[in-house]
Image 1 (cartoon, one colour):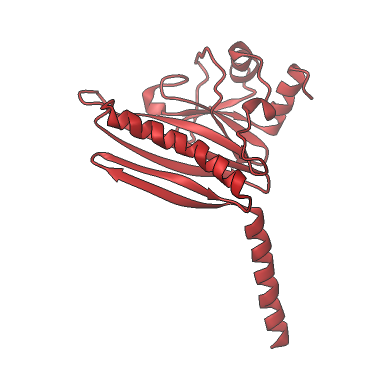
Image 2: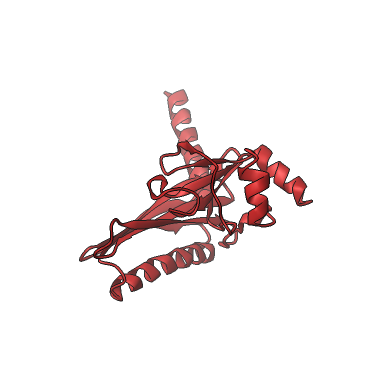
Length: 214
């Protein structure tokens, strides 16, 4: 009996330690005529950091709602995915979808948000992967096969693509991987949806050496 009680107390203590290290992400919701929005509400021990993260997320919610209020689209929805979290980092993807009257189909975008849980600041892509420009991304990464492209179903697609920019939307995939997000039509067909460019740890190391950031 004493052993069982000690085991239970130990388990509770471990759970409390884990919960104090990780953020609690609740779901906020707003619904209007032809508009449904779900978005993350982040809870952390540090209220200032928590408010900084939630204010940043709220800006995306407000902007989408303002577009709806101005009649920029007929119907829309918003949802989110928590992609990765550890003691220091929180990676979230926000997805916004809308339909304009008379359009052939709806359209959507994904925004990758990576936060420092100690400061509440957004972390730029360059912190993880230094990429000089779009040409370097294409020729040293995509065309060379160093990086891979995946469609919205995470199925690998061909690399016969062009882009004039280095996307700053990205998420962390765990195990040291980073995924750049490109919106529909940028790196694939509309059927491919949002396309992800995968940077494995070895690809990241290569780009650091290319740009003398090793």
